[in-house]
Image (cartoon, one colour):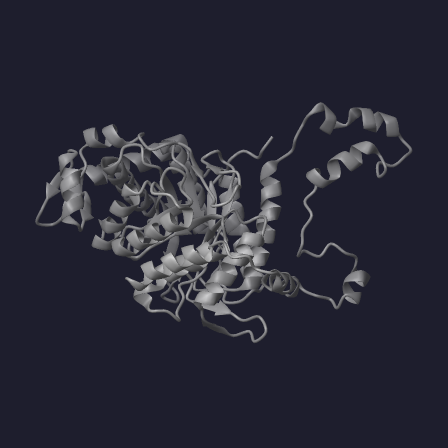
Length: 471
């Protein structure tokens, strides 16, 4: 049996959050800063104020479209891997996302991340068994910034065949990236078996910018899963109370849900969480707090209420180096996601409130997720696993080490780490007393030194390069 999902909201609480969001959508509405999309919503029954760009959603509109998005979806890769089912309560992991700096282990200094490093991170993620999907680890700073998103995706396509998670900043960037995906897969219909999903964020409070609207149009048109990712900051762009923050976040989720179904009924959407607080002491955003852990769990409950998959930032820390604070914040925020039954967690490899990444941190987070994945698998209770016959055979005097039952089960029953130390003191000391970060560095460098087969052939790569050049 798997562990039961953790809850922080009662059934009454969930109803109150939903009813509060409905009230806001009906009475206050959401700003849609693109006339084309505003008109489509009006045609579907929304009440439109053209002067302000506000769309209000009568309850009959909400009743018509809520419940239309699929409860589950399948995400594909570009190779013969089994598609990943999302929405079944099994937590998956995503590397990334969109950092500005990379930390050099040898110097201890951070520097602006490069396109080559984005490719390196993707290659490491491709090789790590506990990373299921690959996000853009950083925005390369050594390319023209108006083309940075496309350059990032090129680096990802070259270095991994796993499912990609992207977050373009404009509709034209999304169009270019989806064109690149078409070239890489050789498919005109890239939404039939999507190898990419897209984060799209409203701007808090309650506003979809022109760029966000354009990205939605491109994403839904291409049949790409829409990961609705509000990021209100409690105390600044949302109420400071946890419940108030949740209501605003939930309202923005529902607005994205309705927009997607108006454009294409049955389009896959994901309820995403990026809980952020404003640090009242220092005046900066923070993401690794007990309050944000509660919001992750609450978000999972709301997603199940709407019968759609859920996602969260997870391996989060506000620490600026790989230290004890980094370790406990990452482990606790990830544990909250797994215990809540969140379908996929993003931000493996990141620290410093998402601004910085390192090869070592990516390897360490992969290790932690392996730990959590084993925990989520729970305890199998079957006649064979209860082992009554073996216990009776051994009786009061004997050992289990050489029993067939032990040989049959120990590899699947137990989790074996690559980085964590499980040796006695003297063998560990004889190996130079390495800490976890040093061991992770060794593993990352070993992956980078392997012969790297590119996932794009020369012809495909040239086509993609021409597409980027035309931006």
